[in-house]
Length: 96
Image (cartoon, rainbow, N blue to C red):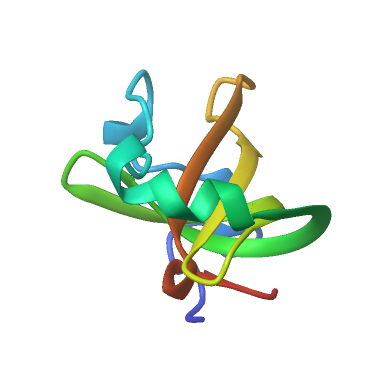
């Protein structure tokens, strides 16, 4: 991951794009998750995940709290300190 040139001492996850403030993250739909939820395992693993806020995607420091073969539920703190939880495709998540 590249460095943050404007705020070198602040990780990208702590300096959100202005568009994300007040916006809800986009989660996979219930139709997309229909088969995934039945096979999901739970736990708590630190992760980085690409989360979409409309047309903007942010790489977020998060905790993976459930996962299946194709999808991962991630939880993170929003830019205003609010708790957020979304399901994303497995390919959008990696270990820090």
